[in-house]
Image (cartoon, rainbow, N blue to C red):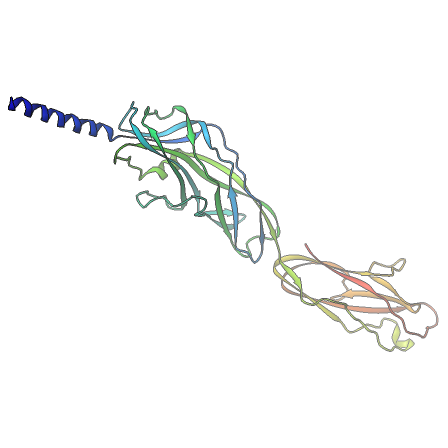
Length: 340
C-alpha cells in the first residue's frame, strides 16, 4: 500500500511540473499596415534667430487594420493560454537630412508616451528610435506566418518632432522639406516569465518595415526692426535766390537692423505729387518742389540686408521757373521701409 501511494504522489508532481512548463510560452510579431497611412504635420514658422522648431506627426492608424507580417518568433503555434500582450509602435527617423545644402537635425521627443527603447535593444547608428506601448490582457493564438495578412489591432499615439536648423541656413521663403521615416507595429504575447528576444527589432524595421515620407512646411521669416521711429525732419534753412536751385539739406538717418540676408524695400513718396515728375517729388509751397532721395539719389530700392542698413534721406530744392518768391515754404513725404 505504501509503495502505491508513493507512485501516485510522484505522478501528480510530474503533472504539475509539465503543466507549468507548457504555460511559459510567447508569440512575437512585427506588422506593417497594408493601407498607406495619412500623415498630418503642423506648419512651422522659423525666424532667423530661432534654431529649433516643433512639428507634430499624427494621422497614423489606430484600431483593427489589415496588416502584413514581416517578422515572427513563436514557441506556441496554436494555443489559448491566457497571456499578457504588449502592443508597441515603433518610429525610426534619420537624425540628419540635407536640404538645399543645409543640414537639418531631427529628433523624436519624449512626449505623449513616446520613449527610448530599453538598453537591450540594439539601435542603428544615425537614427533616432522611439516607441510607445500599451499592455493588455490577452491569449496566445495562432503563430501568424511571415508574408501573410491578418486583421490586427494597432496602437499609436501622436508624436512630436524637433527640427534643428542653422540660424542662417535658409533665406526667407516658404519651403516643403521632405522627411523620410520608418515605422512598424509590434505585438508580443507572453505567458509566465518567458519573453521573446527583441534585440534586433529596430534593424528588422529598417530592412523590412514601411518607409514613408511627409513634407514639413516651413515658413522662414526674417526679423528686422527700425532702430529709430518718428518724423524725419529736413531743413533747407535760409536760402538766397542764387542758393535755392539744387539746394540740399543735411541728411537725416534712419537705421534698420536685420538678423539675416533679408530683403528690405525702401521707398520715398511725396505727399503732394508733381505732374511729370517721379513719385519722390513733392510740392514745397508756392516756391518750388522738393526732390526726396536717400543714399546717393535713390528713391525706390530693395536691399538684401544682414546687420545694419543706414538710410540717409535728403531733400533737394528745385525753385519754380521765373523770379524767386520770398517766403517760408514746406513740404512732406512718406518714407516706406518694408521687410519682405
